[in-house]
Image 1 (tube, rainbow, N blue to C red):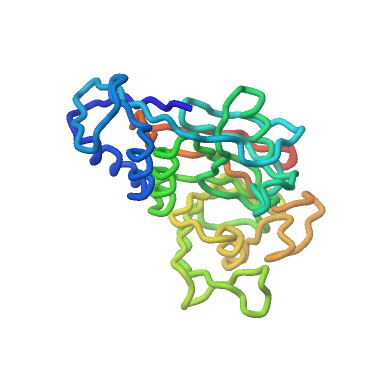
Image 2: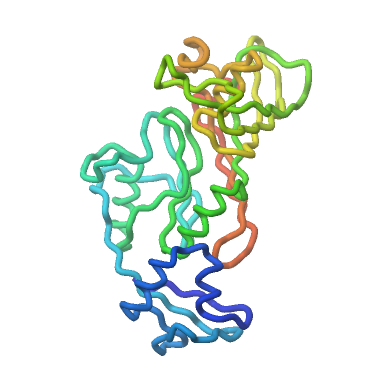
Amino acid sequence: MIFKYKIDKKISLRDYLNSYFISKSKIYTLFLEKRIKINGVLAKENSILEENDLLEIDEAQEIDYAIDKLSVDVVYEDDYLLIINKPKGIIIHDDDKKKLNTLSNRVAKYYCDNGLNLCVRFAHRLDFDTTGLIIYVKDSLSFAYMNHFIENHQINRYYLALVEGNFKEKSGKINKSIGKNRHDSKKFIISKTGKEAITNYEVIKNYEGYSLVKLLLETGRTHQIRVHMASIGHPLLGDTLYGKKSNLIDRVALHSFKLSFIHPVTKKNIVVEKELPLDMKGLV
């Protein structure tokens, strides 16, 4: 599949590729296999790109996950990115790509149905019970770019959560390092020797016995929101790992409702939102 990139300023081809944080080995392979063209002409390693040039990269891709029968809820799509709404009760992927019942299997079906012969590549993850926005990436340059921005916390990820209890303060920042629980491999704990973890929260509304909060992550640790909110006495509703079973909802009440980031190719600011799922909406 051929991906096209419109050049907006004079730059060397190698510097342009490096601006996507793509690996040296990948760049070497692209040149070796003669997969890069500039305005329809095969590119050289020392080529210079001029403003308004059209760079084309012919990627050898194929769908690499088993194809599911279920479809996906597409929230945003362009030539480089696919953002979908993850339902509850499903994992993003399995190490064995031949197995079914993952979100990536459903994305494989979407690609197949739309004639897109692409590897299924996700930029980040959500827990099994968490709903909301997940970014899949179509081309290698954008995939490297998005991975770099995720690792450096330059993609804003906003969540809505229902948590136990009511708040006196309207907002706050939780800055507590998180580490593994040596006594329970499934859990994480607040630990001085753990990795830095920062969560910002804003109380949207207090209800009888629970509250709706908006959260913005500055870091992306496993179970970060669940561990942090439990640490201040407000575990998420339905979170039996860090709190208790709830009569109001049968899962962890967490939804990734908004993403904000700079597009890897167009460099425009992209903001994507998805409303609460029915089980959480019914409680607010």
